[in-house]
Image (tube, rainbow, N blue to C red; front, side, top):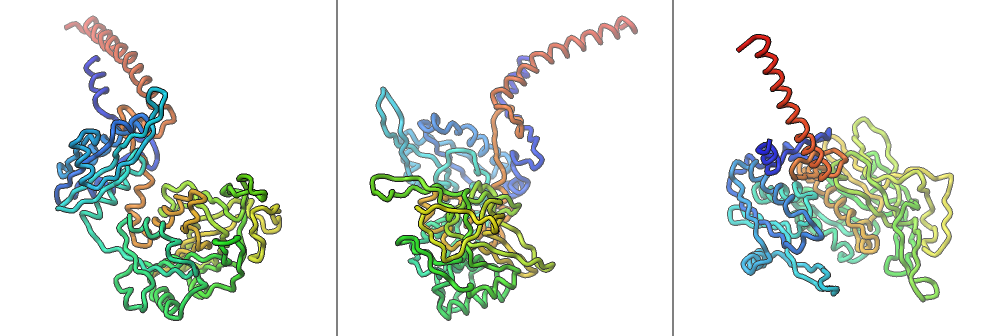
Length: 472
């Protein structure tokens, strides 16, 4: 029995009781890792000083070792301590960026430099997962990066900024695509320049040249995939947030091909980002419920929404759909039942008293995907949803939503599906159970102590009975 308990203590046994096996390595990853054509070196850096705030080093290492087993010896995992001079030098040579954490020592606060990250080396090429603190999304990050090394492809999108604002307003959007290995072609002069691009992205519709409109129209009508982000009105985001009415979108004829109609109304909702603004007296900051910035909780089944807990929108409109047997329409972001509509001439002053319009109250669609036999179009009724305004709302999930929408259009659903997984590798975890891990381990140990002796006694009695009845 002591031997059995020793085995249980050393080895990890995982029983995934969830219906979707979300705590297990996916079949896709298993096939991919077992089919690696060449050797991959994985260097794992994790400062011990991080363990107090992020005690996940062992869990991450177990997952990496599991990947190593699945690769049939093609993966080598190196656990490098960046707190040593040699480990620090290696981290710096790989380009891992140190970050600071605050710790309390002898009643004083000090800042310590720490490293965390994973370096992947394959056939002379190097990619990094620059910050890895928890096992969350590790399978997605690992497999997506290794895929870029093993199966390099040129992913490229056409990007038109037709909002009238500087391109720098969308720097976060560009960066999140670059981080996924997706290149961007900005404002091509003619259609021929787009020949090596797979997806079109258009923000805004008020500042469109004739040449741009021709390229956009031809792209969609040629059956290529696209993402449009169009607001119902222009907003003076550099001034007092005054709205400028728009006419019907000049791209509405394209949306009609996909059964979508973009409406010129604001959608307001009290499920919103609380806004901190300087009060009218200029003496401090007040918190405002600003329903022009609704927060939506994704609830659809699209892989685009994997891993997202919320999406923030800034003065969005709404979309109506027309049922069509030739189209597959998938809602991506829809408000709750307490949202309402307002005219685009409505005042957007955050200091005003807002009154919900009972007649228009209900669910309103803000983002949607529509597919026909040859193509797909994603429409978002907010051209600012990945602008620098996300700094005010802390809308990091907006960037994930945008990135995953583009990756979906690029045909990377298998990779995106990994974001549903929550790999956990600790001894004796029964994934999918609500009990705390330590309680689970204790309960199993208790069962072993109780059941094994009882089993031995039962076998002993059974043998004695057999001998007594039938003899030797």
